[in-house]
Image (cartoon, rainbow, N blue to C red; front, side, top):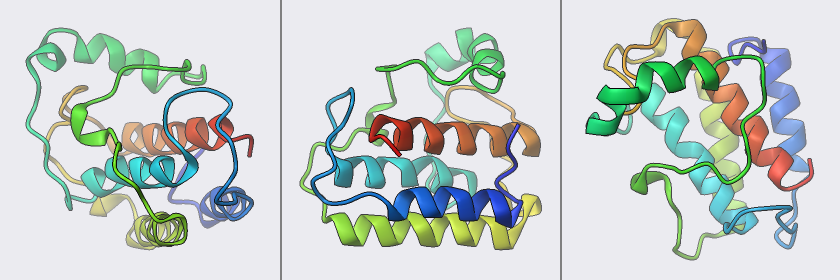
Length: 149
């Protein structure tokens, strides 16, 4: 699995982000590219403690089972449900969101695994540093593949 605390892995994600253009079309889903760039920031900001989302009831019920699937070796499926706070319906500025996502990835990598929050994930519950790293990489990769990069 890929480790977002490895600068080479982060640089690969950033080089893929740099290939995106304001008019890059989605291969699936409802978001445009600027909304996706904004959406991808939320999980990283949550992992760093910048955003706090209350644990959900359904997360308590099925989160640990779902976590095993999400941090496993298979890529994310298309059109998975997401927490309402991750949904982006507003108009987002492509260049702003692209820059913010790149800065968040760089900040995460520079800060290292000890920078991750200890609070439970709102859906998956308690997560190890390795699980956070895998989830962040897989989520970012999923949305970059959504836009063909």
